[in-house]
Amino acid sequence: MGKPMADYVKLPELDEYKEWFKNFADLYREDGILQVTWKTNDGIMHHSGMSHRAMSQLTRVISLDYKNEIIIYTHIGDNWMIESDPNGWETYAELPRQRFEHQYFDDTNLIKNMIFDLQVPTIGAIPGSGFHWDSAMLCDVTICTDDTVMEVPHAQGGLVPGDGMGLMAQHYFGTKRGNYYMMTTRQFTAKDMLNFGMVSEVVEKGKAVERAWEIARMWKKMSYENRTIMSDLAKRPLQKLLVQDLKLHTVSEQYGSLLSIAAGTLGDENSGQQDEKYISRVNDWRYATTDMQKPQTARSWVEMPKKAGEWFRDLENSGKPNPFAAKDVKPYRPKK
Image 1 (cartoon, rainbow, N blue to C red):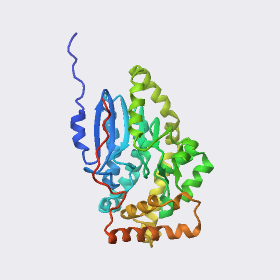
Image 2 (tube, helix red, strand yellow):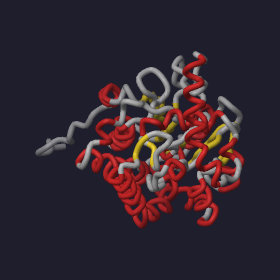
Image 3 (cartoon, rainbow, N blue to C red):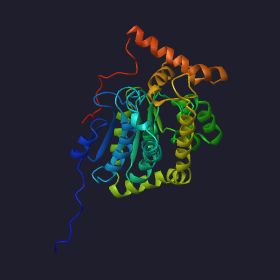
Image 4 (cartoon, helix red, strand yellow):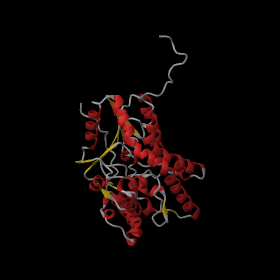
């Protein structure tokens, strides 16, 4: 066989891009199965402009590595993402260029890269409650633990729910039910998600990633070609949905945020729209109570951010550890 005029382009290997994204994800591959575990440094993931961008960038990079035959997305620790980096939003707030790039590109890429770039089977393994569940719910198959509670929280914080979570609620739950959860910010449980069609299986606490590996190994019994084509079919309904509606949703959220910034109503719990740096204390309270699993009222809507702020300040003053801010956690490793 003769020598080609030009060889294949050299793309990054796992050891290289594993280092690039080490502050945001732990990457572990075994027998072609890649486990992506979201984190921040050596602890749970803290939502920030930087992590938001890294999530979409990593998905694009791993899609270029054909050694990744099946991908599992999960989160370090006992929950999905709940905490936020209070200092991780400075560039996100800069107008006009930085804010535009974060909301116009990053918000969209976080969603579409999962569906259009990844052409292999994907499994979302949710270890517990949290928000920004996009990467887990966009997988071909999604597993959650029986204690998992989730939500589309934007509207109660003054945001247009356009980052893709509201769109997925409409898609999975049906229009009326999806609208209800999107527009009232009421939380939905693991049982709700299974009944509504948002998750594929509910397992006991601590078993989500283990079950994901079991399914991945089952798929490995199929030929590489057939399971890859099967995954393309699994993604097709979401591909059509995103082509039609994703950009409209993301741009709508961006426009609403810019209106709040222009009106000067972006700030703390006393403001019309909460600034991103207050996400942690709001989320911590929402997941520490069962209040948000009930139908919401005008009174609860107004009191929620203030209750969250008071709860967070009391926690700080008491010196008690935040139940959601655990740092001594290790990524899951499958048993061999």
